[in-house]
Length: 56
Image (cartoon, helix red, strand yellow):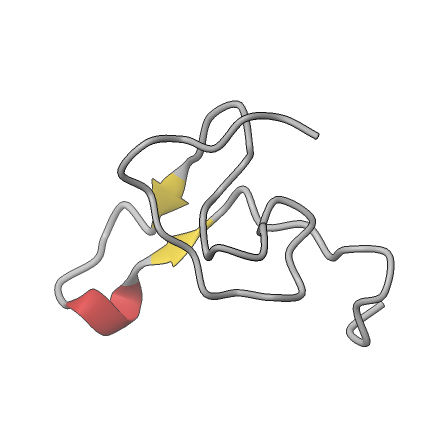
């Protein structure tokens, strides 16, 4: 598994880059949407379902 990205916390337990200490282990992340005007408009575009994810 990759090392965590320092300073990036993630609570999305069904993402393959989430670790048990709520850290992100992706090599890098992309956050969008470019036209966001509020916090609820943003999202992590690096998200990928983990092997046990029910959204597959």
